[in-house]
Length: 219
Image (cartoon, rainbow, N blue to C red):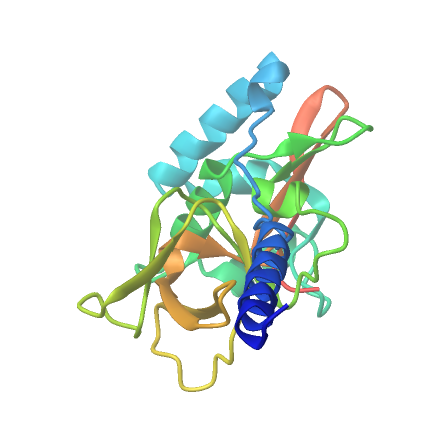
């Protein structure tokens, strides 16, 4: 074999090895939306009434469905008495209504005991993926930009993908920095990604009545 033929053979082998390696690259983990509420008609109706109450900022209706010992934080703010001081629902700038509306809009699922947890990004988060260092895209065709601004170049897109977080220090408010599979840092508007430990709500049925057992964020 001449040196030239040997060189060509080596290049072809390296190219084949590279192609094989590319074929074995893991596909992105996706977390597709799930909403099992309709599988239990009385819960589905209950949730619809709660969503309507949230839309009209009906504090009394929300208080009425809180469990007496409802968990509201990991710092001891538990029980119905802690709800108003924590959320200040009557204030015009209360974050309660938008926060709870978004949680309820993102579906959820039942566990083996018949309890319902929302959103699906919490209740169906895959085991083995770190909840502190990843977020999930909550849409298809979610644009990833080169900088945290709408005019920045689009460098990729997410389709319900779970992606690792990038360094958030200095990130512009309303945006999340992520790492693409290529290793490139991208920026996504907050409305299109969600952490599994962001706000979530849990429901159970006691004495024939659905109630909120927890409404918390963090861990």
